[in-house]
Length: 330
Image 1 (cartoon, rainbow, N blue to C red):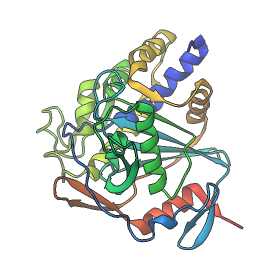
Image 2 (cartoon, helix red, strand yellow):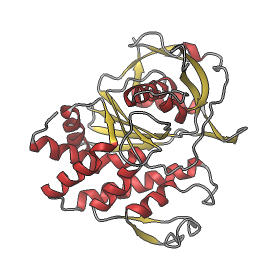
Image 3 (cartoon, one colour):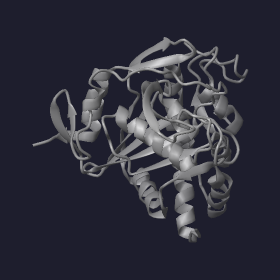
């Protein structure tokens, strides 16, 4: 599909603003198994219809002024492949509220234990199991599955976790997009709040460091040997990086040639169901809406049989969901 020059520029500007958060985890550990389990009691009463959800027995409807977009970072490098094992290492929900022209950024822990769909390689049938939400991007199988189906399956897992919220569109990207975009804007300056010299000698605690694309991946992705080694602390570092990146992007003089080159460099790293009009809409809202809050749903991280498991605080999550996405049904 051909895009006119203005649309390409808008799309590239959108990528410069939000694409880096779509692939911010640098996780080289490939988890090649799925945890079997059973749904929590009461999980089935989360949704009743597409328009109404029930939380603690009370009816709620989606806020008509809020539109949600899912940004997914997958643990692959290079151009997007039509098949192959991949996980959703970063899950971010952008929510724009037209009532007060604000937006909310929610980052979901990739270790979150929740229901995902698993497809049988032979029968083609699907069933639910409890596993890390990161595994939803691969349908829990090693079969040849389309990138579109992977994204849809991840979107469903996130929607179910957040009590049935609807996503206007989804966008997934591979890891390379982070370093590509950071280098295009001349680096991002961040404050290093913990000792990361085991990852790179330049990442000294208490220092402000200019990150190029390669160092940015280390800063936002390192987990082993850094802080408490949990994904929660890594997510906090990601959000700090995102804020620093957003400020840098606003101050950089980005000319047409730079935008076009950035678009060309990242185009093959993207899978999305959004059309040009959606990218234009998001670009305009990011530049005109005020950021309301950054949310990382709290919970407890545990060491499972094979890897880390994160159990979200359901009571806190309910409050977040109701506040951001829903209103009481009358």
